[in-house]
Length: 447
Image (tube, rainbow, N blue to C red; front, top):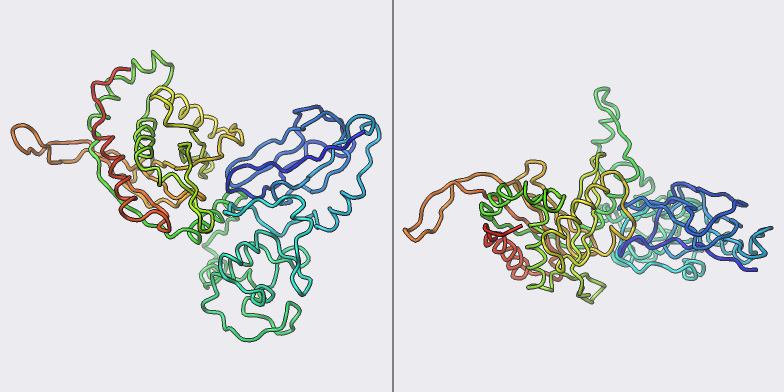
């Protein structure tokens, strides 16, 4: 005679909420252990949530398309004698009612805050006016030094007039131009300057709507979440980007020479990505302070070197599967991991844990023919490196006979880093060290 709570799982270090895409079970349905109960999504991955036990679905607290904080109970599973005639727990139902479980006011986007527990969400304090603010909105308000009085004046577009993430970010964006005059609380008849947050800041979108030669395309769910994540990253970290040019002639010649034998021996195609990852992992070992995250005024140094690789999806969106403990793998192991994760990413078969816990990210803008880029940091990491297209160029080569001009395979590396904790010396030294490892690659290396 027991009831088991099904909890919204944590999908990554910076993820605090997820969207319910589909319930595979309804109240009264029998479910077996590890059988899928629902599908959820974040900006990084769509995933199925299995049942932790066998039983009967007694109650569902949320609807499809609701956004739910991690750690919150989303369903009750009756087990044992209760499974034959499931009855919702009154205490759970009251908590659901108190919290407004049909929550549609917060859009999912990674923010670097502690994931709220179910208990914390139930007892979330309200403003003096009685207005409810989600933990996400409160954390943004704290980070942006928005006072309680200012928060009270922001009109909410969410359920029951709640302030959504988009509402508060729009307020931050337009804060400088807002006229700061004393305002009554939320129910003031005189609207604040942000009274219609849905209106565009500039007139360009409106003119586009009026132009019959323009087409309006709604962002899909993943694009909206990625957009939120990118804006949040720029708001969080002061970005600085450093560049180095690297001679990768020996790597190109080596790969061309061994790719047939490599595939025959290991059953894997050798690409440049695992070679780049090998160099990055070695450089992180040399400069561990690049492998950190920031928590308020604290720097968290990660002992594991987990390298994320940005992977383009058929939809045009990106996902970042993570190579765990990349520094412990040889080139064959890295190749197998890279090929496997990239293949499954493109068909939507990644597991939640395979996009979690990254400590550094590598992205290949050269895939699109770009020579360099200024990538946006994947929070809560503090650095991301981009590799550009490899191109033949004339370059000065030092030989025992003096300097010569030769045709070489050259490539740019660019790295954006969080200037709060990574200064120019560390950032510049790190990217140069990666370049050094690539240039010193052993062209006679055996497969």
